[in-house]
Image (cartoon, rainbow, N blue to C red; front, side, top):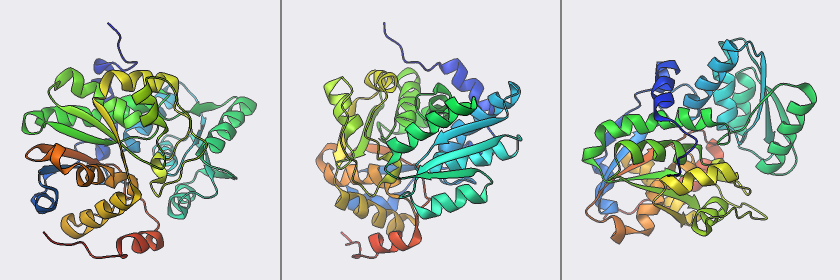
Length: 326
């Protein structure tokens, strides 16, 4: 029988290695969301930590292993959240970090990467251009290249969220997971398929950045020429074959949502849950808004995966129109 690259025993060990500040994030039923969505909704709040995203779980694992091996430097490409998390985790372990990002990435994320002491290199083009440049820097300097989703530590760090969800699994029957490179979806999906197989694992991606969803549906890597979405954290064009192989084993479905639904989800999370979230974190709510009949009467968990937003852009999105009360 085919297996993913992930290992549950290693994931349990990872939970003992990660700084507890990233673990045990809140999981709670959010009644205020339910009248507008028509189903029971629980939130797994992965923004309640120093880097305001789930990425710290993976970077804690990576940097600890690097420090134990005597490695002193690491480079990664990032849309913003991975770079922040890597800089935060490396700072306390004496590691030098270089982050390569698109110059069009969210300014607030880039500022935070600099503030955390990482060297930031900006490239023209999108995230795929940043990935190419980071790989070139690693080859030229001989330092470790951290590749999000391809490096299994990033997936197994994210998978510790799955361990926490599995403990509460009898109370819900589906989980909605933002789908970008695939670390979060494959990590959480791996654990739930092993420990709570009754839970439906549903990945959600913007229709303007559909490469991984098209790949999952076609069971082969499908690349796109562009990725146009406000959800910058999931705006990839070139899925990684090994990650797709894992996703095919753990995801029950992959759905696409429109930009208007993402914005509506962000407004709803602010208005009814008091949460400021980045677009990627609203994908789960967007999926419910577009598929009310599918989720009616069910209990769904949505993973709120990041809250690093540019405030000017955020106000433009959520201030465009009020949320209508049912």
